[in-house]
Amino acid sequence: MSSSCDAILKALKECLLNSDCVQKQGHLPSECLKQHSNELPEQCQLLRKSTFECKRNMLDMRTRFRGNTVGMDAEKLRQQKTPAPPAES
Image 1 (cartoon, rainbow, N blue to C red):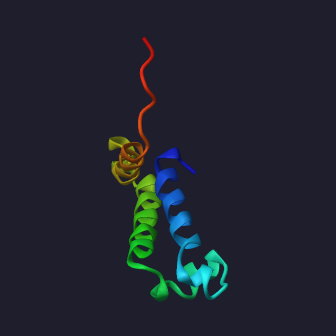
Image 2 (cartoon, helix red, strand yellow):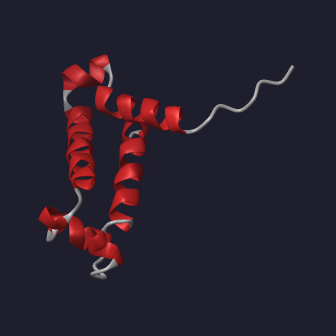
Image 3 (cartoon, rainbow, N blue to C red):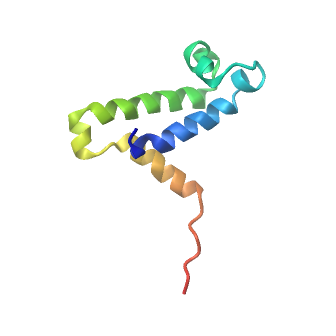
């Protein structure tokens, strides 16, 4: 898979692992996505949709030419959350 969707995919995995579907009910993350998607928190549902959009945009020739903006936005958010290393003098 392209690296443009990695940040969204990692966020979806983390969200699924922290959801009640996995934590309390003991389902596998894949089961939660396929069979219990309506029980997932809103954040996980939005990340699932974003992952779908990102993968779909990888196949769309117009967005392949322009760049995958869905994945880029997620990468920017991830970089904002992690502090930059201090500059050496």
